[in-house]
Length: 429
Image 1 (cartoon, rainbow, N blue to C red):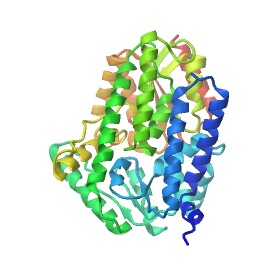
Image 2 (tube, one colour):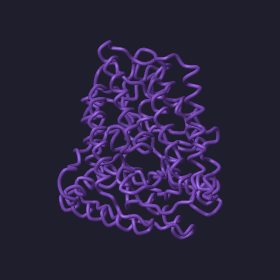
Image 3 (cartoon, helix red, strand yellow):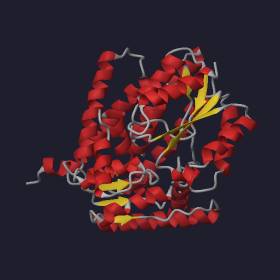
Image 4 (tube, rainbow, N blue to C red):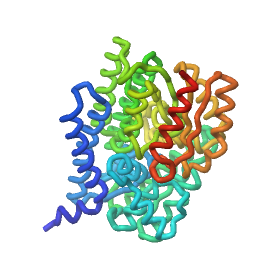
């Protein structure tokens, strides 16, 4: 007889997350007014449903596939499996549990992994070292940075987990999309051999079609954010990032964005703003802070500062053609993969990133930028100062730079972050 509990325990961190999400959602439902932080309420509701499905499938013995967020999970739905986003686990646990992923950062650092690498991988590495995850295979592109790619061999060489690494090129040309499309197809074929399944590309097409529709809905929301005041609360950005990684290619993700679009339309029509009056419109061109999502609400209510979007909420792609042959399908998948958040910014020179930021600052009538200079993102270390100068010269707005680790509060505390933003805000009011 199959031991369902034992099979589920191959993804213990997901069970931890499911409990945290369910408890937080219950508190939100009981404590907040009906119109209070709808992004949090709706996001938790749909993520809870997805988590329950993943745990159920793990209990049925489906293979556990770890993946980097640069390899969208809708591509993995050509298999009957449980997709686990390595980076999302680390940071969602950082957001929802009191000590976050810090014990697992320390565990993998004590084992010998460098402390200055990205915490987005280190949390899941520590959990896997402690046998809380039992992956059947892991798939990651050779991107977005050396720091990331250098962490993944731990899974292969220390835990003997099959590691599949489609090669993502640096050149942004037509031949790159063709090449990467071939890499994606080869990698899925290889993954199928590892887990004993034949890729069902017809099934995958259906999930990609859901993503096409979701992307269209996200674009509508993005356009509404040009309005003053911004019709969505700051918390939307955090839940949108979670939706992108945990719910890619699923009905729940589309439902989340459709619900948020309706809320945004009503607020846009009524010129409503969440929390206090909108006084400052900010763009965070890199990441928001995951270990303290309460900062989003603090900025809305205490400073009247809107976070219009962060790096996970301003990258969009052309719809993937699912009606043609496989070559066309994988070409579209490759083009999407190379346009994903952080992949686009980190796999080419900084000029397009600077151009995008200047253009978006103008389009969204932005008052300032706030750049979270994350410890693990060494490939971006020199960019903030260049961006600051470009924004000053081209748009006439300032930028605050905060050195921190977005997943570990011990490097730069919540108090220090708030103090920096408060002092910066005083210069704008």
